[in-house]
Image 1: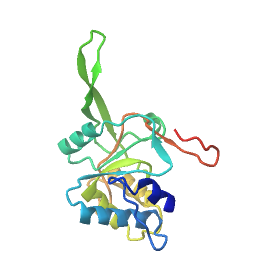
Image 2 (image 1 turned 120 degrees about the horizontal axis):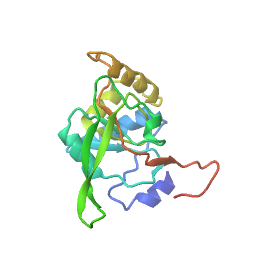
Image 3 (image 1 turned 135 degrees about the vertical axis):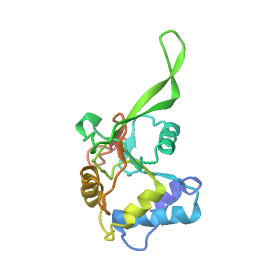
Length: 196
């Protein structure tokens, strides 16, 4: 914890949230979300990042916020650690959502055009890096009640149910989407000390 404070204390965008006891993943996430909600009430979206996953490709954050603003049904965007075709890319009757990148592509003739990207609906929840709608996420995490564990398993079951129940039941979760390309990788400190 001292190393984290020494590294990030002067960065106003990074907040180290100490705990007097081990809160596990679920409890730590709720503590952080409660602090964000209290001190930054205008926050609409949150990146959930795990310390041992890094982005090896850039993310067009502005385009993701734009598509989430345009489609209120998008609650969660998962950044895949393997090719998206290896992850469930369907959820009931939901259709993929196409959106434009805010970064223009340079075409062969020198002109520019926005790149069209796709979010696929998914029933596959993961605790790996993701972008979420703040109000939705805090309610979903708090609804787990038992927070001294990783939320991945119970939320995966609720995501499966949300895709296949018609209409969804009270504790089902919906609005999960998969980013269009693999863009995170695992940092395995047991086998390497190299950091990208």
